[in-house]
Image (cartoon, rainbow, N blue to C red):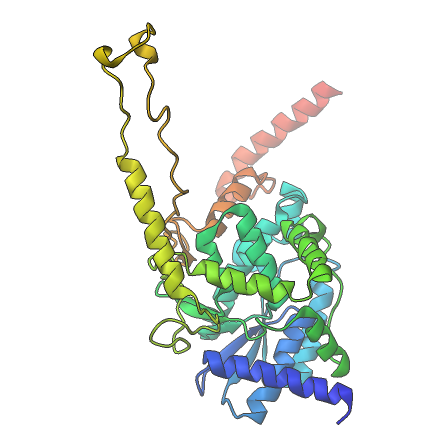
Length: 395
């Protein structure tokens, strides 16, 4: 067998093993593939089509694309997705930010600038995928996140000190009772290099231009760090992914209740493709740390009585066993996934992040359009006369 064909076969078998061992799909299930036109989603669509036919998964595959409204980038990549839909014989649904939120990313960047704009885009895209799936009546969305992406997310959450989010980021399947839509990452353990090689040898049609707004993203810094680590230690990427999985085991069960394996996990919760072998010891460590923290809270300050003093220092400066209460371990903020009170979509707060960001954008949006009805004609004429007087005065 030629080397290229051998590689393609090995890659497809590894993805099949991930799907089967994690029990990602159910026969007859409709699955939406988050398609951006890039290499990851294009490879995901191609390999799922191949495996679905080869192993008879019985899946109904649909391409779901999000149009963020970035001229010179997303409009070109969507043309690639449209060609993919024809090449793979899959239906395509495109959902735009403008129709969902009333804003395009070009408008958002014009409003907030290029720093922090990726926060808006990421929050909006995650919810847009759920909305698009709901529109299609689909309850399972697969994304093209690979091992490099997961490692970057782990690193970003570590740098932020966001342990609760770590559990969701490292799980191959995420779902919540507050949402009908679950997500999975079939390419979770595939290196980015492998995906590029697969696309090359299969001669896949994909869009390779980077988003014009992404150079300012925090993820880019994490990516650079991980690439430098990989040069020194080639296994760094999967090592970081595995470390993230193990650290996620530290999260108490109520914090990770939004992460569910469905049919993927076994009775001891070691499924979801996390390959967790240290869950018991980590849980014990968490209990020990909690006990130590509780003991620290019970410690009291002891002040010597006047009779016990042997020096002439005033009472206020008496020696103490603890000058300050010892600081305990940083408490983990509990997160309970529910539904946003405004839009009804998944959120860990009363108001989801998407609605909060939209509120800020809409408050600062100038109101330039003045619509005048028949009943307002007289008032508008008066306004026009006042404006004319201002112009004459200015002249």
